[in-house]
Length: 213
Image 1 (cartoon, rainbow, N blue to C red):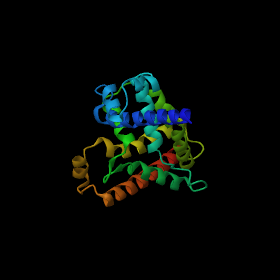
Image 2 (image 1 turned 90 degrees about the horizontal axis):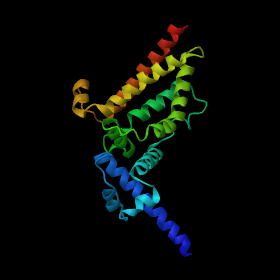
Image 3 (image 1 turned 30 degrees about the vertical axis):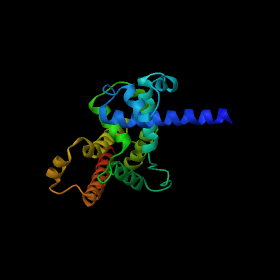
Image 4 (image 1 turned 180 degrees about the vertical axis):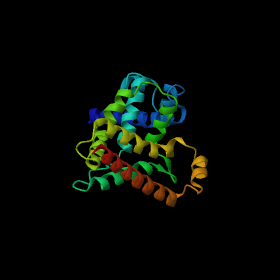
């Protein structure tokens, strides 16, 4: 019984460290965050990071994997058998809705933006491993809209066009977005913006398909 309790305590400490690290890394960045900061927030001994993860770099990578798993929502799992346009619409709406104006950025997206601004080079392979399977699903959906003759390059260029329309919500200041839209960025505007990106993207992808025939 005591061994079971000890294992549960170790797992609890490990999870507290990951959650505390994610919050602090997202707020201060990897370099400005200290192991002491994390352990104090997690209520753990400073030796706990070394025991559970080895070092701060490995904890950072594990924090990314954990945050991604918490953030991820299935975009295609409930759309099996649906037309590719409907699948793409669902995915784009999920990307646009990543930034909830009531709750703010999700934990994972705050980590992502901090890494974008202050790259560490520590999670590149993890990022590829995590995002790779989701990208292939997205690219297959695009391929179904363009047609079977579409080149890999065409699919990748369409992906870039779609993703960067959605990313504007993350990298632009709210005031700048409202200036360009000439409207407060409320929930109704987010819905209209999502629908526009969907319609614009599907029309563009189909146009690419016509050019390739």
